[in-house]
Length: 67
Image (tube, rainbow, N blue to C red; front, side, top):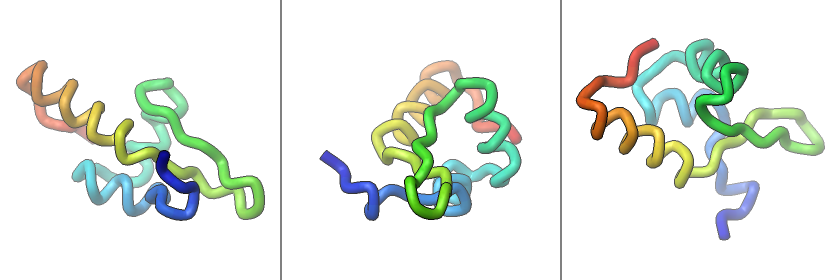
């Protein structure tokens, strides 16, 4: 199981996906990907498995990740 401290924050996750942080925030709001809020600093944190799953879905659909 991934530790919370190992989870990428929004800027790191956006860079990994090749999109802007604001696009990733919009995807969280639209329930396209799940973000967990850190209990102390309220940062959005992402599981790497969820990021990889999103990339896989996009690859299967033959699309690129769009902003």
